[in-house]
Amino acid sequence: MDEKVALVTNALDFVGPPAVQVLLEDSYRVIAQDPTFSDLGQLQAYSRQCPGTDPVAITEPEEFMEYVWGTYGKLDVLISNDTFPAIHTPVEDASIDDLYATIENVMVAPFRLMQAAVPRLKAQGSGNVILVTSCRTELPLPGGAIPDMARAGANALVKSLSIELAPLGIPVNAIAPNYLYSEAYFPKAKFIDDPVGSAFIREVVPAGRLGEPQEVGELVRYLANMKGSFHTGTIIKFAGGWPAAPLRPL
Image 1 (cartoon, helix red, strand yellow):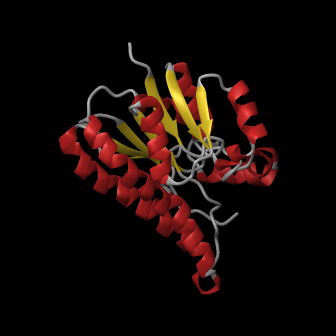
Image 2: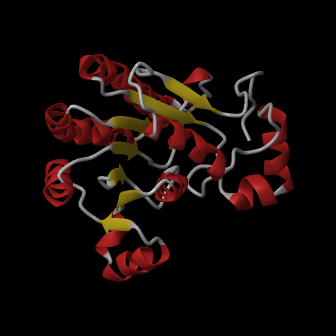
């Protein structure tokens, strides 16, 4: 049987760790991309900790796709796991540089990656595409214009890509978390260990807790291993029933 090959970007952050874990469990060779792997010590440590991965630090999309197809000749699953600190500030006080940086990391980055990958996926005639976005736009908060704009654009990209690739049988879907435990967005010290933060989570999330990484991993596993392609163009909310009531700032 041919080796199954998957790609996960920003493998050390957000949905990266659980995605890599479930793909390894399902016998994929996982190309784990993370910019911190430019440090050889970090790369080697990760390779030892996660056998079955191919850690790389390449960030330029075309160079990255050349490496993937040049090394493996195919790609079965592409997971664009895009993350950037959520900058909350009133519009009148916002920095345009913060806006550009956010858009670059969570909207332009997946667009460029897919721009480089799509011709190869089309020639291959198969592949499952998963973008990790956010469902934060379902209930915007004051001061959230910058991350809301960028995440809304990424979700729109999923819809457009799914239409373009559906005739070829290549599904494109998004996992859109909110209130998922990660040190990037909901760090343990503030939202689990701190009584104020944990009370806030119990108040606003119907499930009464943060989502666990292994739970979002279950969703990654389902989308990565789909045999059919009719399930495409969906933004799958992963948020413990949120939103269910108006929020208050923490």
